[in-house]
Amino acid sequence: MHIDDNRWQFIYGDKSSTYLLARNQFNLVAADASDNNDFIHSDKLILIDRTGNIRGYYGGLDQSAIDQLIIDIKKLKS
Image (cartoon, rainbow, N blue to C red; front, side, top):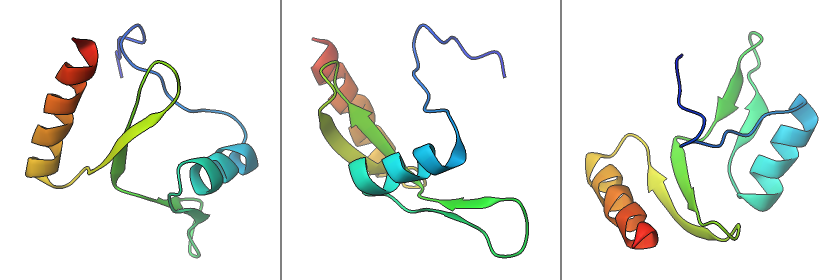
């Protein structure tokens, strides 16, 4: 995907650990879909600061939420 990994941090690992993290730490939905090898997950974006604190949840399909996320990122950077 040509993603600059100096700017992003992605969660990866085995399925059970990733699901546990999503459910128990981020309080998000993560489950196997019933009909294929896909999984069900939240549309939420989570802003986490450098110390690991969750600073906000944002609807990934809501433009006003995305706009607020951008504002909040800029606040954290300053």
